[in-house]
Length: 92
Image (cartoon, rainbow, N blue to C red):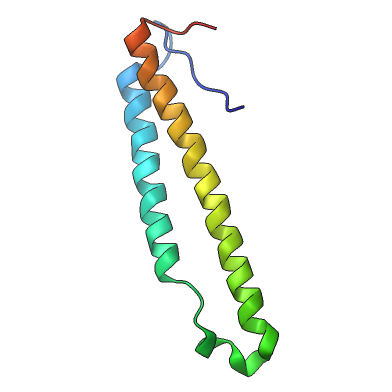
């Protein structure tokens, strides 16, 4: 479970929190797009042997998976921050 911030009078404003998380989401999505464009090409690996491209593709997929997990966590936090304003504050 992802821990989310609580909107309250002594904390960061909802608008500032949401803006920050939306900025992170935009950057994460841009990074994901750039990473996809940098996918391994077999022609860059075959001189290393038949396994090199497979290893590079596996590594690339693992990086994308990690990035997607981070993006999903930030989406959960941003949604929770946004929803708190609709409910009038945090409730357990």
